Image (cartoon, rainbow, N blue to C red; front, side, top):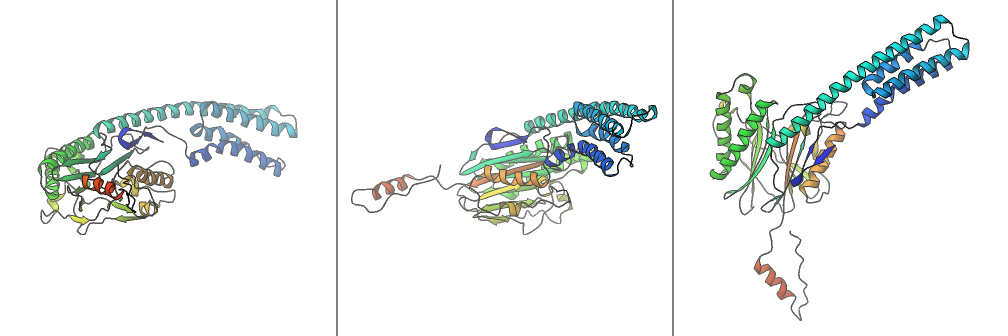
Amino acid sequence: MGRGMRNGRKESDGREEPTERGRRLRRLPAAIIVAALVLSFFTRGSLNTFPLLVAAPVVAAPLLSLRGTIATGAAANLVGLGLVLLKREPTADELVPFSSLVVLTVIAAFLNVLLARDRAELRTSREVAAVLQRAVLPDLPDRVGRLAVATRYEVAHKEAAIGGDLFAIHETPHGIRMLIADVRGKGIEAARTVNALLGSFHEASDHRPDLPGVVRQLEGRMQAGLRHASGAEAESFATAVLAELPPDYSVLRVANRGHEAPLLVHDGKAIPLEPTTPALPLGLDVLAVDDEVPVDLFDLPVGATLVLYTDGINEARDADGVFFDPVPVLSRPLPPDPDAVLGTVLDAALRHAGGHLQDDAALFAVTLDPPAPTASDTSGAIALDAPGSTARPRKDVSP
């Protein structure tokens, strides 16, 4: 379903692929014809099964191709005629229903052509939206400092508009700063807000010495945009998570603005990094009591993966309306590879939702690698391998 992109980013290309549910539905026209045969056999022809035969091409129109729809109508006609011939020679009156079945098959074929045209237009709209999404949301690098980076963007197949999900990572003198956000709404208005937030994030990351300063600048940018907006755009806001690792990678700082809690995946466990103090989304700070920016501190061990995602993942629903929970999926041994971790959670979410997500989903993950060996580490390893030494040098597995 997805299409590989460089830098570990994968996106849906807007093409429809049949799900298991879709494949089962496509068997329905044939099942209706078989049901008519079975009922006629068990009732010895006393039950009129013609309504079932009439229904077969009508049901086939939205499910099958044009050829399949016409074939279904022809099969229904032949089955009906065969059932009559098994009992007696058909009269002129009995041939009338078959002519109406032919007419219904023609109508079903016409409907099939119209539906196919609508589906093609919708596919084209989705493809255009996906291309525009890639233009708005540039690829991220594979590595930033000691962090291996991976991203995914899954376009909802029910939508044909640019989404408001975004992610970014930026290395600065103050450390590595990360952002994931979800702007309310879709379309051009959401794209403008996404562009504004991405630009403001990169500018603030370079010039603001601390994470609260970055958050305040993003809030100020949102407020400035809202002052000049009208209609639905004037009511926009964005949930967001901003994270920061200092140059020594000693601590993970997280500011959560009403967004889904990031997950720390390590040693077979996935731990939600819930904020100790809830905060309003970006754009709604005018409703806050004060301008304090809560920042939580967490450990990010070597080999651990930080997973950030938008609500297209945890709000994916199955046929019974049950929401997807990524924690159990990631609470098992996984390689310290952000791309593999994101592949695991996205595949599970798609299976849970029957192949298509109800909303766009952005996923962003980083894995902390061990530090590169220093000159002193190398000289120590050589010394241990000197003649007469019983110790063996330790193999370094860092890239």
